[in-house]
Length: 188
Figure 1 (cartoon, one colour):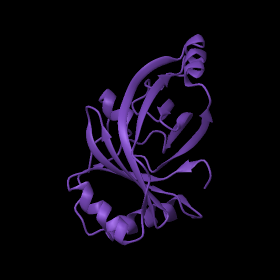
Figure 2 (cartoon, one colour):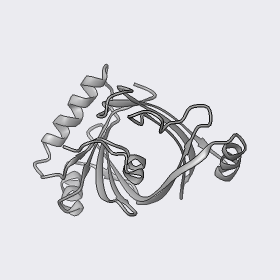
Figure 3 (tube, helix red, strand yellow):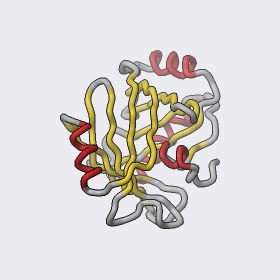
């Protein structure tokens, strides 16, 4: 499922330490925490915010390990609650040069999301603990294993979450830029 992202996000109610201990017991491996600064842009030829539902984002991410350019198109396009997205991401050597290119092409800055992320890999799932400036603490579960369909990947995430035996907060059916701009659909 190259170029497709299937994930679920929740507000983090319980202690992240309890979850991390449980992941370590199950053989999970943690990466080092990383500060990620994500700058989101709007396209001059197609206003990402024009419709009733925002389904596309263009982002430059800057973090300790380097920078990347990313475009996401969430599906179903017109649905308020999305199931997955097309995701095209590539490293960039010079984030400032990319910002200048976007500015020269009239891409407009939308919002910036500043977060610290600690990512764990366990059972084919990437679990990200995110502390997002101004928004709070979240946990994301992204499928990283092999699956033939989006439905299969979703079922594997749900099975993984169900096996945690820990209370998570509300499910968030939106990305951090949605939340930062006040565009998040209903939760639950």
